[in-house]
Image (cartoon, rainbow, N blue to C red; front, side, top):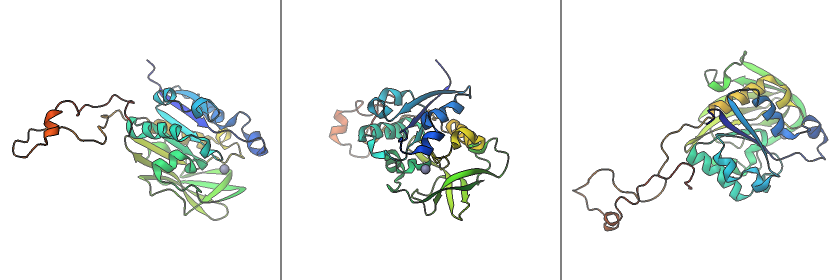
Length: 272
Ligand code: ZN
């Protein structure tokens, strides 16, 4: 069995009417991200897409994914509730890592896992300069970055206040040429899983295929999102006591079912 980290890069597609986006990513964004991730021998990369059966998020694919990279922008509601639930369950129960990029904050999976806002927040599309500042230089996501900051020459502005909750760890803050600032790299623990939001990657500019620092952050992020193989949680429900409790009344129904209800589910077979 391969010891490589199984990474699935998913995107929703770009409409032909968005000429600049199609020019920047003629083979869509999942391909551009997959192309640099595939150069890392530790990663086993699969591409997936909204237009594939089951929204490109089948249970079989999710079961074979350690880390899911997600880029979406316009078609959040084309992802079915069932497909979104498969992703959410995998994060919470199996510890699948989730890397949310750019406008993925409005995706169903983000709303369910982070409580993010449907509309996202303020933005400005004029291709201004963005300077990404490292806030937590000790974090593995910053491994190999050579300065305290890096630039993205042309980016879409997203500004605070931003529709994401206070993170467990703040990795980057981006300053935009027009004056706004954004918490642009944030991590969250949810259930058994880790989530990393990284704002870089407006579709009108070939940021993922050309910006080496962005590529390094995404590669580092994918590796940091590797699942921790801890115990499978029993989840919600009545359970047998672990210790003998002679001095407290024990419900009759628990006596009757002793040994039957405190079974741990198999990995990946457990739903919320
Ligand atoms: Zn954008």
